[in-house]
Image 1 (cartoon, rainbow, N blue to C red):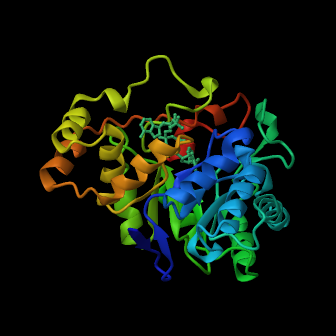
Image 2: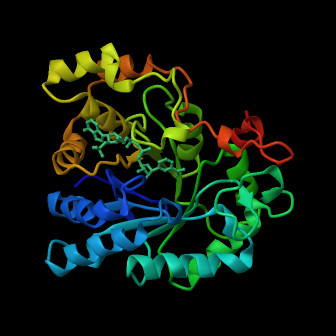
Length: 317
Ligand code: NAP
């Protein structure tokens, strides 16, 4: 099992199972089959609304002796309505209870976006709260406290620009171990990856296959398909592997963690096995040339009239 090591010495399996959009009725078996196939890293979040079933899958796998709790790396994420310091501990406690776990390996601030408490999906601009009112560093201090209290082994961020991480670091006792962001050949995040490398923060590549299974309301008509990219297809054909495996291998070869989602046991195995493909420099070079700055998860859903968030201030572009 390939792993990456955090700046404070924790080892994270390089390829994990994403669980967004795995419906409750299949989440337990999807997680169980993944652990059976060798996955030791599960990526979840409260907002995926399936943590109870993800927890059931983990419990069943542990019960069958497929893995011990300490062999697994389990990540979850703080939702946007719980950024105020007093809401952080209840939020992780709810996640732990749903997952049937005593501790998480990693807890992330899911988005640098704040909602009013109890507003899961805002429908109007006034249901957001600005980062001036509830700054990320304040949320971060509460994250440090739950980590010190043993509710999680490490803490990190997601969807954060270098500037936002710098803001957190100014007031932090501990650094984020991870920044989880969208990354694939069409949006490689080279500058952010370099920043993370310089600061000893690991980057986790989410939506490494282009997030084709995300909800209809987030799909665009004219979006490009990574699976249809000729260069990726040719690289796969030349190696006798799949296009998905090339994308996953690319993420791992450049030193990222990555968390492809699949509910299908065969594709889960295929994705995990991609970790063992060592791409050569010329192959990596061809993939580097595919960059087109294209986000599948573009953040436009946080832009609402009268609200504090825009795509520009979200990504700090
Ligand atoms: P993804 O992993 O890029 O793509 C998942 C889609 O690809 C599903 O439709 C899946 O279908 C299909 N797929 C998986 N393996 C395949 C293969 N080998 N061949 C062909 N198709 C394959 O998308 P994602 O779910 O957006 O991203 C992965 C994970 O990242 C999420 O599940 C979540 O854990 C995390 N994430 C985090 C954030 C954040 O804000 N932090 C945002 C987005 C995602 P099947 O299930 O049918 O195989």
